[in-house]
Image (cartoon, rainbow, N blue to C red):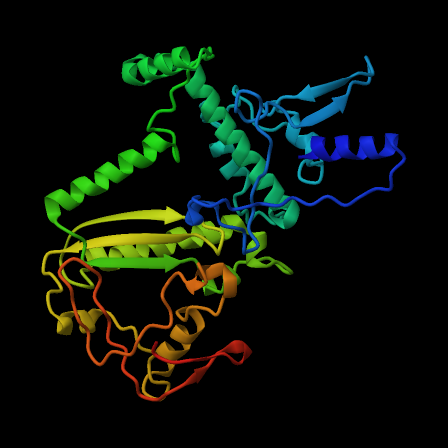
Length: 396
């Protein structure tokens, strides 16, 4: 991205044109999955980079000038000197960063993992030694540091897969290789080296398909899920707010929000799976997503031993109505602050209508279909509640 900007500025300088302002626009083409390619709507961290001609993550994004030769040279992403050069505020003494021969200090001289994530987690640790951790004070610079290191970890994992195709037995994917060779012959083209991305690589198509097949296997053995539960990380959680450093916002500490969310997720699973909050659990499957509309969240499917087979049983576990502020003020405050959808305008619209089908019709009682979600009770009490901004809502 920076190369494109500099090239554009050089062309304008050569042609004596006034400088123009460039913007990066992300377009959503028809047919693309809106859930994967929708636009950013929250203050989160992300990386945008140009792939190489082979479709790989660039080997280097830092260029230095050699004092001896006075020539420019690129610095590899795994060079231990890269971080103190790019982030001198975090490494004031020029301490070298991670490298593949790095070892632990003290009595335990065990070699650190080949992957950099252990070292990165060590660098992000909260320290109570009286000196603190300067990296955690970086705010937006800390966000950039996190993204840079995640890209470094991802690239290192891909490099490991490229170098160890025999270990992952890539030759067993003979059907894919035959298909690629046939396609190349039909197109009168030549393919380069074929690299197999195995299911062990998180986020790869094979990885997602493997998880999908595992989930379907659970359904075949234990039956359809009874509960679909979503829990979203809340930046106003007390555990997050109380551990922020002076002057910080939750967006300045992605490490803290991730740790608190993980603790909340484990507690949620304990309540449902081990303490049988909704009854005895036969099976469950979950996935954690970090989508652009907000912070990370977990989707949890639960298969109960005793099914919610009647509307009365559903009403005991699930309510789509706003709690009465007089009889249950705490729950009313929580629901009004966190559980009311919208208004969010065009972001939630599909073909001019709300994609989540709000507002929904009033309903005096819950009804159930054989192969669909229940239609929850939404009684019309005539009560209207005002949210921030003057927007009025009811049970719909």
